[in-house]
Picture 1: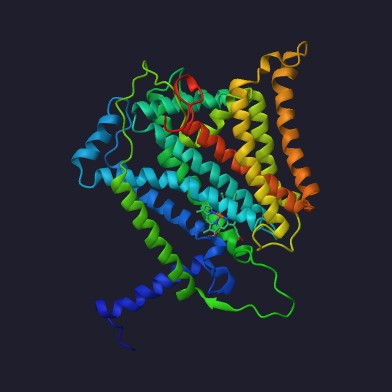
Picture 2: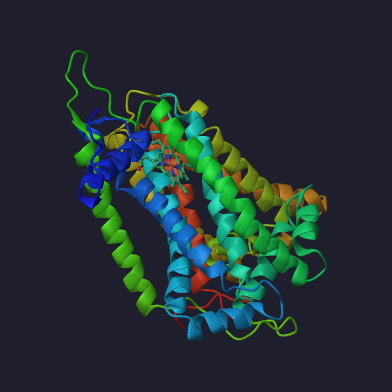
Length: 438
Ligand code: HEM
């Protein structure tokens, strides 16, 4: 019988084989050369995976010192920052990675949309992705409260009250999450349990399914090649793995340096009797909070439900498959995107300013039933505005349905970003409009 090699030197090939094995469970052995082009995916899906891994690692470290009680939470964070070696850095990396993950997952969704990668059998993965995005928001939201400082406490109070507007389930969700009329010990318990146990389990399950589907759907989307054309394929090791490693090194270095120089915020201890002015939700909900200043709650919830349903149903709404793999579908699609960008940058800003100074919605439609005048009418007006944008792009740019949707999608996403920016930078005391950085 042949002797088994032992010792460190001989173990290395085995370790390499094990690593290769893991890599080839996640990736196919060969990938089309075009799928390796960095400017196709921008490494965004991989970056999201990496950030999730950084969050899991730093999160586990934080759990060793964090104490989820109203009396101890803030003090335990202070002690972590001042008495534990690298404690402040670990917390800062966790904080910024969580925020960055929202941005990266959002950008990844845009790339998937722009390349039409929700088509050709990828509808389920698109839907899974939308759930992942929602999950990441809830992850950040539940983590926000844990330091129990003023910012955390009041942002959680405002955000939970936003949840109250969700019809049917909203009040029950608030009652369950809050455990009482005010954010307190039960709220902290619930947020902590959801943050460290429920959401990680859900995220791992959904992500595993997301990756499995990518392989099942035949790898990432590609532009259709001419019949008979030969698709060049390169081996995953080393070609894809080298690129992934390069992105990982850049992301880890950037996040660490940023976290070293910009510590995670920690204000004074939460004071339930002293509300800051303005009391703002976490930044990723400020677009919503801003919209609530302009639309009545039920109209806003209906609008969110309609837009979310539209996003979920996109694969059955836009079935043109010959442009998959091409950014913005076509030159006309690119012009539609530019039109959507221009309208998204200008219209929401104009409406915010007009609503603040000139529009007096209370005196619209005198004599109409209240529900129609204050809820249904503004909702219909907003939907009509979106329909107008879609049809104008189709008519004026001679765009087809798929290209028209590109324009509408860009308009909606740009509006979300603009409204969030207004909420972050332009809302002062009593939520009045102020100049940014004033
Ligand atoms: C934690 C969040 C997420 C992670 C870690 C993740 C990870 C990935 C990875 C690694 C890929 C392979 C290609 C690439 O790197 O672009 C991918 C592809 C894909 N993702 Fe995600 N994703 C996330 C969220 C989303 C979201 C928010 C959406 C859309 C709503 C989405 C929809 C898709 C689809 C449809 C594909 C296939 C794309 C193609 O075939 O070109 N994912 N995802």
